[in-house]
Image (cartoon, rainbow, N blue to C red; front, side):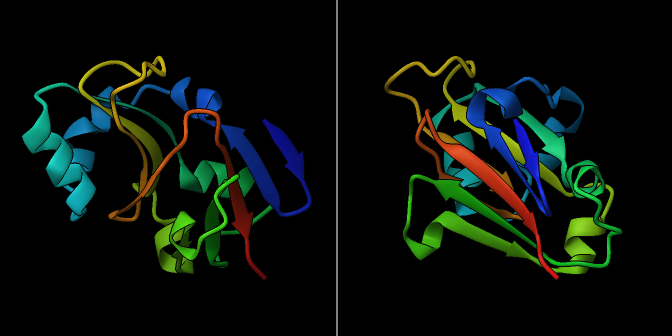
Amino acid sequence: MSLSGTSIELTVDALKLFPLEATKTRLTSANSSSVRAARQASRSVSWGGVRLSDVVAAVGGDGSQAVRIAVAPEARPSAQILLSAKQSSAADTLVAVMREGGDLDGRPGTALHLVTGGRSIALPVDAMVTIEVLA
């Protein structure tokens, strides 16, 4: 994890350090086609992640800014999620990693997604997730 200015970079491994068992029901019922597909494809979906409001506070945000979440090395527009100030400051907005069909150990053959705000991005195992507080 590195901290610089108004953004924070988290490796997928860093996100996986925070188990989200208590919020599993909320996340799996989110309005995301990837989440619904994961539920249908497997009875076993594992999660790890952080509360977005904690990340925004860590970079000095006061909760009144929008947030951009981007996944590198992906460069296509679908590898970014923009959240409004209202979404980013909500106590229950999470940035989570979901693995279909098992644990979060990076095993090949299972899909990995970054899920937040009811949207998801397919996630390479070695990806870097940048969370940026916008002015």
